[in-house]
Image (cartoon, rainbow, N blue to C red; front, top):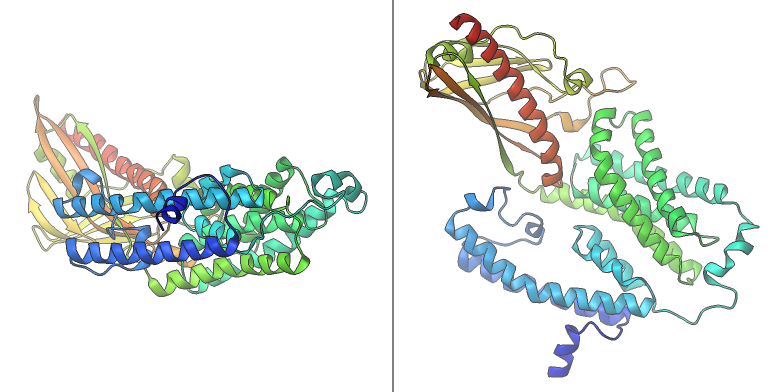
Length: 460
């Protein structure tokens, strides 16, 4: 028994698909049971499988976590370490038994993609004796029967329509999560390469090129079929292109094996159904959106009393010159306030409509805090179709509250800070936060610089 347990953590040797599946399933069941017990004991809350994607239900700095949450994360990390090593060891042995590159074990650490890797390793037979004249050596002979261009056209013609169905499902549910932004591009890259190499094997460079090309053509198709606008597609391009290339890399490794046609067809069907299944599961689970905070500050050569007047209600801003605002990202135009003191309502008018901001704290001339009860669309989509309005423009990026903090500085100057707390239902949250933080920071600076110019002009 002891030898068998040690074998689970040993990087040497090989393992078959059935044993790999059984070991993986039992390891997950054991880890989930331990994690569920730890969550109940330490933080007194239930633990569900999808919480592995976001353990605390929010994304905050580790330094901002309370002692209970820090202890919980530390315990969860300690529990995970032996299971991570076991997963690496079993995956390396499984890849070795298939004759696949051991470097593919890196996919074990990519969310959603690791699940696809596990399924592939479970359904793929171990390496068989090479067929005479088979493998990559057949490339010259097979190229005489079908050109690369024909293989590529077939790959794009089949994989792209299949993935368009998944996007259509995501817009109807709607669900803009890991299924759409992780599983779909990875499956598109893998599916296109499997079809591309169906009749003849191809080089690694060719496989990756086809997977990235499929991703690019897919983006054009989304624009042409009015599923998305150009700006959102450009923002999604880095993560989608990288995952499509990863899928193409896995497809290249798969083509090195000799398969029965039925096995290949089953794998293609599995890849076609996997993204819709993840999209549907996310729509049902509806995980809570993390809350983020963006703070921006500027120093103004004017007293806090003068700056306060511009903060509460500022005049019309000039037309923006920044590329992102001219491309369609919503930008502030002016601010109006009805009433004075806590309970007054401030309206910050954007290019897409007004933010309604009831005042919660009125500490003149030091601090103005407000909640947000109405949020307009975050952008106008850049598209050849007039009035394109995808579902993610409604309720997927929501501001919750904000503040202006005025700090007096020596020499009659003022430090003005603007802050916004918001959440979005786009996953992976950490990736999309890079974009949303940047846009909100640019919005802050547009307002702060306008207040600075107005306050300094009046001060003089």
